[in-house]
Image (cartoon, rainbow, N blue to C red; front, side):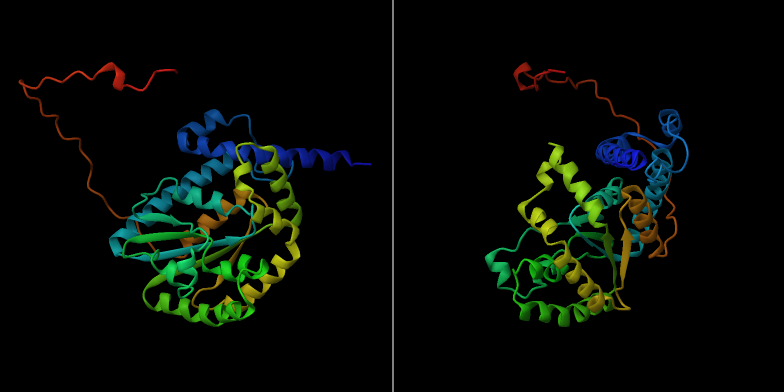
Amino acid sequence: MTNPSSKKIAQAQIREEFLDGYDEELELELDEGLIDHLMDSFHGETTLDGSLDRRLYFKELFRLQGELVKLQDWVVKEGLKIVVIFEGRDAAGKGGAIKRITQRLNPRVCRVAALPAPSPREKSQWYFQRYVSHLPAAGEMVLFDRSWYNRAGVEKVMGFSAESEVEEFFRSVPEFEKMLVRSGIILIKYWFSITDEQQHLRFSMRIKDPLKQWKLSPMDLESRRLWEEYTRAKEEMLERTHIPEAPWWIVDAVDKKRARLNCINHLLEQVKYDEVPHDAVELPPRIYHDDYIRRPIPPEMFVPSKY
């Protein structure tokens, strides 16, 4: 017989998953002054299932995003080069965290590298070669949504790489990352960790949500079946590539909102930055010419006004 309390918690978790999918648009529209007005119906710091209250989440998210803007200005001013790697199981929330980091930043300064499967030509190259071209220049941050660690994860588990290739990767990657750090790159590596039960819930929600079904590839479904094999691969990866120059940081990602806030807060702590002063912005006066006449635009050029 199902425990009524457990059933309520499960229902609350499902509700949180649905809400989270639509909060992203809300985050782009709200500012801190509107939160209290729109979120008065939500009280307390946690919900029934223990997840973070939305009002507290929004407030902290906007505060941290303000700090990210300051970090961005500092990166440009000081010519810093930052690489942040996001790894983790499918549906662990890497993409959601990356979106919240980049939401209010300049894409010319902070960009995302999400590489597809390698082409036949890329497969014949030095393994790290296709990643090198995405590394930052001075004044840039690059967020890798999965990275060269594919070889230690999906390629190893799915048999896309030979054992000798995986072993060579483990020999090479510490030296490769040490070279990056010596060159002046700040390298930060995050592993988003979720439970077996939480991944099952998120996959189930994606199956039921037509707006998220595209996120489920055959490879994702196979990763669900091979949970234990991926666990073994993750454990070996962390053991063999956790180096002082570029340590791994584990993000507890069972609660998406807490995971995002904790990750952003930690990222900000990895770089010493100060607020960069800016000159006050003043709108210049509009120039008018008496002989200027605006030409009419043909009606057929307009997008039909259906809304």
